[in-house]
Image (cartoon, rainbow, N blue to C red; front, side, top):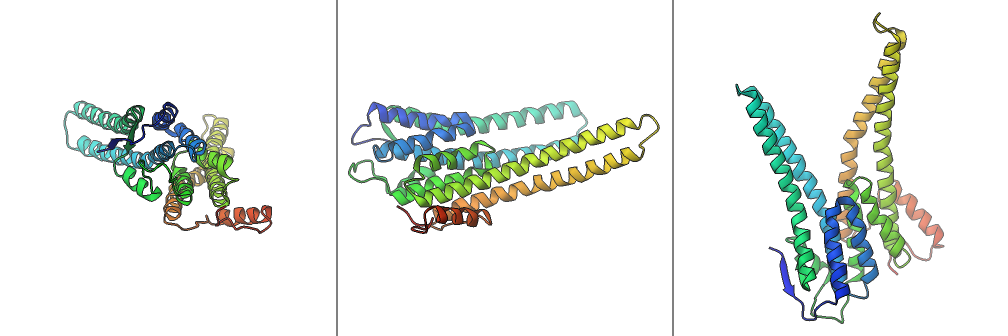
Amino acid sequence: MPRNTLMKNTPTTEERIWAVIAHLSAIAMGMGLLLPVIGWSEQRRKSKYVSFQCLQALGYQSLGYTVWILFTLLVVIFTSITAVVGIANVENLQTEMMSIVIAHTTLMFGLIGIYFALPIVGAVACAFGKDFRYPFMGKRLAGYLEYDSSDEDEWLIEDHEDRWVTAMGHFSVIIMLWGMLVPLVAWILQGKRSLFLRFQTIQTLAFQIGLTLLFFAGIFLYVVGAIVLLGTVGLSGDAGINSSGMVGLGIFFIFMLIFFVIVLTVPLFHIMGQWAGYRVLKGDDYHYPVVGKLVEKRLLQSSSGSQTPMEHN
């Protein structure tokens, strides 16, 4: 269960508002990643309470979304297998299919409800000035950051703050397009303060941009191949597929093959992003293949070699 305790020093109205907004931003799904990063950057040396709640919200949206996606895939696989087995072993096909559709819809809405429920609870708790903790993650994050709400004189560990934010940027690769908000905003708002954070966010952003372009390139090739096929086969009329139709068919199959290779490759890059986030949290200075070295070289040139991207200001 979430830990909701009244703080020794009740947060101000401004602090509560920041915390509430950070948690409720999860309702916006991927777009909500923007607000916790802004809140943390704005309040990181003004309010330890807000900083912690924003980092919690950021972690929930990055890690929680990944877990939600995995559970959703499991539900789809389970209901698909159930549908195939049910169709093969039931006489009343229409009734069986209706039952499967209802069960699938219930599970999907149930997963969405669970995903939204915790941030809403967190927002309500923070609105009343409580020190909210997400199940599983909250206590561990507090220990990682050495967060103690009763000690006003100690800030969160800066190195671990930066590592948490950059790791969430790596994890968010699974969130198409919106996942780029984490490294982009963190780089813009905090990149000048920490060369380590700047390096990690830039290489993460470059990695996600490259992956996004690859995915859309696959879709583009598939669409172009389909257009070529329709255009060339359409020219053959009723006489069958002529030479131009065969060329169009060949182009379509080639483009379709490339598309499927890209689609099957994308999850491997997602796994690489998850691994990068884990390595950063463990204290390593992870470099993406090729991209990491290029970004590091560029940063070393811009900083005149006075500080490596693995060091902190």
